[in-house]
Length: 471
Ligand SMILES: [Zn+2]
Image (tube, rainbow, N blue to C red; front, side, top):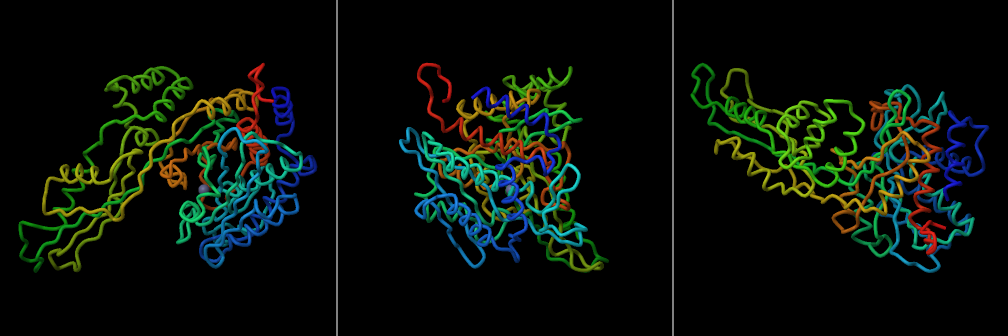
């Protein structure tokens, strides 16, 4: 196992950037599938995840998977999921599930300056909608599973790969549908998902994240109504002023610092990468209670503060109906990102107390779905750490909590832990996902394929009882 990893590491260091001509047979197969998936439009408005799922099913059949192990599950016109299973001859554990979504965010060719649905190789990157989110992982998981099948690989637990629709929005969320209607096909001990990336800073591989928690998306509406009247005769009560005072009170308020297992581990690990005094300040967050000077330092940093606590911020305001009339109505939307496990009703009560004006009505815009963090099992962390140590010796494996959202919450709520980890590194600060000119480093794509293959084999290999090593 170790020598195999070293050989992969050597390959990686020699092959940057990977030129098309240098690809081996498996890399070429993976790349061809990736290209085909990118070139199928799978947007919610006009694309077809059904076409993408059928393409993958055809490849699986050609590779020898039987029909009973391949399921194209159609939910609506143009909308489908794919579920495939590589069976263990003698399962010792429950299955593992490799999840990726095959729908993509809308992409306008005029914004891009090129066709988002044409796969382009340019410089060190592959370009196209879905190259990072999330057709890269879809192509990698399927191609690796096909290779395992062809090699006669015998895992000690079933390996399920699931490709889904409408993760990016739309009425046919594939994960919700499968959990409701086909739970038997996707029941697993845990799930490997998108959401964990690696970070390249100044050409160095610094952080390799395992996402094990995410915040909860929850919006509230604040509303004040007054009788109104002529603006030449102002009343003491004014809906706009009342609403403004309520929003300023929310602005002045901070929810208490709340660490969980994931953020605690994140700060413990990240403190090692910082110089003094920031390193000590970060360790101060881990004290009980957290050191006040540490909180004061990190709550000013917009990338760190949301990891410390629930946050709420005003995002929309609408008020008044005429320039020369007293406002009859003033409304604001406040968007909150709750710490995992929080109850939105409790957060609403806190906001209501902070506003301290019972003429300001507050109500949820929708009921946000809460999900608990997945436990950081040593099985996952050890596997990711040992492979990372060989492939990217300078990178630190760091548990992470995303402040955004993926389909992980549906699995977590169904009792299946989810870990976002990919082996795919990206340049720090690059924000093209969901935006223009989405791309992936050529090296990252092929290294990610090696990493995920190694990870799945490590998690599904029988242990040698004498050495304790995977066979
Ligand atoms: Zn995604």
